[in-house]
Length: 358
Ligand SMILES: [Zn+2]
Image 1: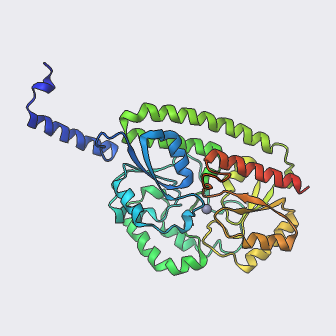
Image 2: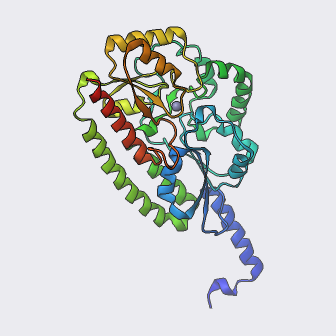
Image 3: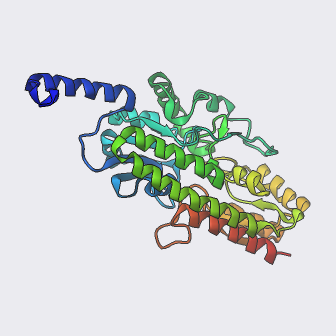
């Protein structure tokens, strides 16, 4: 007879309780043994990566869905409920999700937050040569967010953020730069970074659901193979684009990582956040730049107002080359319903427009 069976029931309960406490201490909230891991992801691109790792073991809630904009997200009651019940929360980090600390507090969420950009090489905000208007005026605001990753902020910082947010609310909707922190958050726009996101997701799922870990790891490995193949495909697709045809205009500054990885220079009239209005002088400077640097193509984005890009197109005669998916996937019937489709669509759209513009 085993020791466990001969142990009195009350002792077994105590042991179970202790085990539960130990689980909480090192793994976050213990699960009740259900088959599903309750996952909340902050936006659609992370959700697609999460589905590829979690398969049918996870029940997934997405805060900012397809064609939605994480920069201007307004929470719904259902989001608070999902956060409160979550086992794992997936966030980009790098201060994209300025709303998350406040939401965590409001929902009573206890789940660990995995910042999926952990381990990537972050780009500083405006690292390159973006010297158009609107870069300097919000540095004070950016500092309020602190330099930590989005998910890992403590309660004091979160509280501070909320206060600042309320005070600055009016201001933000006029001038934007909602998530302007120290870093550029748009790291998912390169495949090598997405592979790091995927391994972070597998680690977060394994920590919260040890039983499911072999499945998560196997799924992550299989999907990582697809991403490696995608990277080779993208590199081949853009290899033939001449060096002097690699300046691209998009509405908001979401493609700096993409540009660095795939050899393009991106300019954006709105700056880093979609929530901002471009200043007249900023647009004029960009029109000048498009002419001087002979920008190869202009693009719309699924989450941004087309007006600015259309104006620049009219003033410069450079055609609008199509729509890029920056911070959100398309709906299921669109051309960017998954991460892989999004990257493929963006690269093909850029290549086709640039080659047609010669
Ligand atoms: Zn963005």
